[in-house]
Image (cartoon, rainbow, N blue to C red; front, side):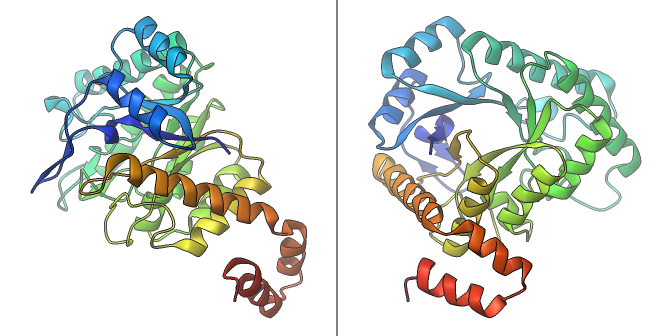
Length: 319
């Protein structure tokens, strides 16, 4: 199991009410990753943390770290706050696509395996705000153009129900898959964020399987929440059995990418917070590996629900 972290969470963060942790440089963030037991993967946010590619590669090599992904942020610039890929103004859409292309250039330069993008500002806050038909067409058009550029660097889309828009355009795994089906580029995939899936009232394990069975690749972000908001909590702190089931099916599909932590320490000690996440993720992954997955799937095929519940109680909950 390979674990990493979105390094944007390793410094100062803020919400509408408070600021958390202390500001640090990108190199200091990478040094923090090195301190966290079980982590060696880095998801870096483009363009706000990337800097010079060669310099960053040097730091990564020096610290023995690897790139999990490059995360392209298309929501921070003032013109993209109301949306980026689905806006009616072509010049705004074009600049968002160009940002993703530059993110691919950077990923290629540093040797990152793929680019991931969560278009959080695309969507709406109130009814009658946007033209759903043109917004959807523009999403297909812009994602298609970005995906076609440097196909050797796959583009992964990350759906989320809400935030920063009250209702995001790609609000579910199914809608993100529908978009990719329309785009029709095999060098695309879905970033399946456990917390986003839960917030959308999905079952994360089922979402992962649906991605693979729809013919697309998957990249996993780990965390947890209360399903009401995307709190980015330590994994399995609220949804233990969901976490086990996700790891069960990740193993079934021979998932080999990084399990990248998308969690925010806020009031907690930085390194301790991520080490608790690392150890529970590793422990649950190992637990899932000890289960007789062939037996579980046979019982599913036989619809022997009672025996499955008995196994879950005995082998997972240890009752």
